[in-house]
Image 1 (cartoon, rainbow, N blue to C red):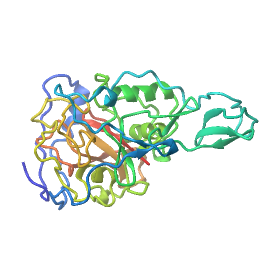
Image 2 (spheres, rainbow, N blue to C red):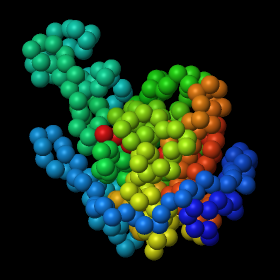
Image 3 (tube, rainbow, N blue to C red):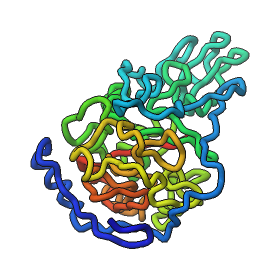
Length: 352
């Protein structure tokens, strides 16, 4: 195992079971990748590392997610279960009450609905946009909702406490159906959000999805694919710069640590030999408590692509390594085409 600040080849081992021929081809492309470890300090920084509470409507502080560790059996507490059973979300734009025939139609007082720009509330007989709180960033059936993993507050933004699960992604598929809106123009080629392979168990991270699928899910959930601190896509040269990258700050902290919890063992090739339920490796947290599996398990797409000229074949970035790496770090960085899918490729979202 090499330390931070050194470039190293990743020795990759495919699991013996559970991968089809297509999986073998996709994962074989990972062999020989050299990660882009930067000169990051192992020091986790001197600032207060505890996540600030997320403020909900009415100014109440909301602790999201619970800060407790996972239980002895390796699972999260029930109220933080990221893969819990939940019914399908309503279709996009579903109205709750009131006349939703057009944006300018008269409406019933206090009626709500989901509009093109988010939640709308009837005020003085007219529809008006009403922003959802960061604790419930999505709009479903006219109400603000959390559609995805529990959220953790970092410096100026929120981030999913786990990778998006199969169950959560299935809610997205149920809501969208054949509708592939929510993608940027560089994804015009992408005609389906379905996973490229059979789905794993509900609490495992969703994988075998491309960059455009991940981007669209985050938009549906009222968030965005993690990118630049302050908003927007992130330059490829900045994916491992803690003052610019949302994902890397959440993983490595203000000091840009490569492995912030040095005593923990994440799900890399010395672990299960396969993907694992999100959050089940109790000690594998980022710099901020409550953010699980940023190192290992599934590699994670971020909103960082080297160009937008080629569309499907633009080079985009994944961070954090996966279960097939010898040892995963916050400073792992992979470059793949925007339309690439593979068994170890997943994601999480950012908001705020």
